[in-house]
Image (cartoon, rainbow, N blue to C red; front, side, top):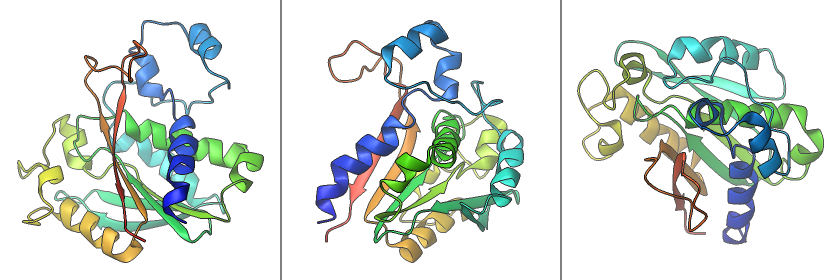
Length: 218
């Protein structure tokens, strides 16, 4: 049954972040053109329309989330240099979805996309109600805040956190592995930037975000 929900999850959550703020900042099309090309008026979180997102950019947004009873927020770890890493959760369903961004510190696109998604969840109660009883969504915006601070792929130990699943040498990698064990997600979305030289299928449109998805066996 959970496997049948895969298309719903992909279409619902990725559609909600179809044009994240950081992508708009570097896209030659105008805002009006983007609105014409999509079936909804995207409400983007202000302050994240920049190429490099650092922890200081999302810290005020995290504080806002802490004051919002719709979301559940927990500090689930710290980076090598001691920056906090938070998990934000919403929904009460049996199907568990886990999304995380900026595992590579210089790949910022998905972090504002997650905050855009949170804004849509908050401001569109009808859409939220269509899935919130079926899905529990967990999000970690910015797995590698030290790398984000330095605008580099690796953490400050010089290790690629995305290659640390076996060795578990980084606190960021250990945190992510621990969350996987605790949450036991049915679907995991490892959110990355994508090279502008790749397109979305055969549409001729540049890809701005890359999703590595894993489906747990039922």
